[in-house]
Length: 353
Image (cartoon, rainbow, N blue to C red; front, side, top):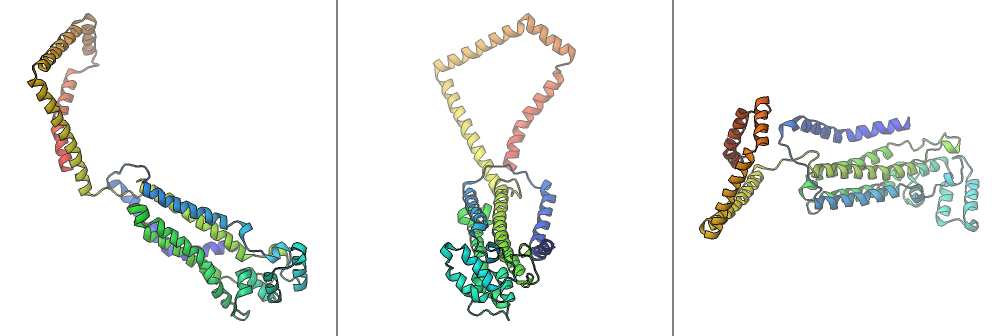
């Protein structure tokens, strides 16, 4: 039931941000057949730098979600109920400490965990908030939320910094910079969603819990979920950035000026090749020795091909192909005509395309 409530809250919070993007994606996919096809390319070098940044932060976020890095939960380590007397609770805790010595945080929390409301606040906002907040009182539960807000927003601010760095023009060029606004909206949406979930949380939800295993350790669960969500978002955004930068998704066709520039470069290369061929041909024609070799080659070529075509096997093979219909002279002539007519048309298309 709590999961469904959390999911409903996330949908209500992130829905206004995600719905316009989904509609835009649907329209893009719908109109994609009318757009020019853009070939898939390798991942650009600057995009690889952005992917590395996202990957490193995703790994750090995933590590931060490990239970071993979370602050100690007194009720978990002592397997105590929320109604356990204070002296019994800290006696159990001292028995777990080396040589029975409690820490400064234990001594600070000892008088503050005397009431049931304080213990509910402890499970909601964590040990540091309950121990070190100078202005918080149980009568004003919102004061604990205000004190817990800066450390709550710190991971999201770092996440926004990483997203901004990964989508900056310096790091990822145009491929990442065009998604900078969407990345900022996602990062800010995650921060607002968590603030709303924690702010709307019923901090007295554990007040009537009888068994220790039924306690909802909300603060520790939120830390784990936060790390997993940030890592998942970064991995998903990295995959999205890779897909768009390689023209697998939301490909942007080159502008008309870029296409014209590409065609001009191709024509310049062809013109250079033709000029080189013309120079070689001119040198061959002007040189008497080379001209004689060329004449001899083509004369010899004609004699060889004539002898081949006059052989009995070749003549019979050609006759059999023509009689059986495997080779059509009219079809060959038509294809040759279309090929000859298509040569100048290809140049005209390159010039106008």
